[in-house]
Image (tube, rainbow, N blue to C red; front, top):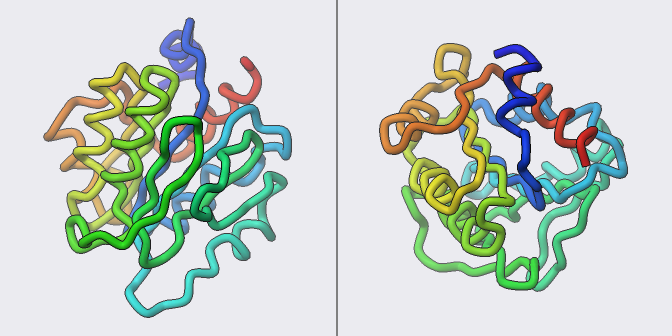
Length: 201
């Protein structure tokens, strides 16, 4: 999809937050789309990435070395702030509550995952409605499909990585099967979309 077509999709939209979900292959995918975003990016970016159980989560440290944006692991009752990339902490579900604050919990895993992409996306959709962008990338299970569908029902913009280029296509395909997203894009096109959001606000 060329830039003019992307601009047309964004026309008239006010974006307050972005939620990104990924699983297998997600680190490499995020490193394709996030570097280059500036320190003063106009909205918070919340990322839920499945991490192998028992493995220490060093995502915030790894990405802070590559991004100008501030990178943090989300904490309970932390306020979402523009210009910040948040990672869900390992072992906790991450929700967004009214007023734009995070909530952590240790409820049962969803699709064998905690943090679960579905829970974060669904809660963010409840808070931000049509001012939310949801992006689902590569992954090996169906987590995120229902969450992205909830964003679409709420009027938010839904984006799925093109399954043809995903390292593991299960997650993108499941999202497309459950509810047709607004956009199916390559990583390069998703990067362009994120850059356009920066420049239009």
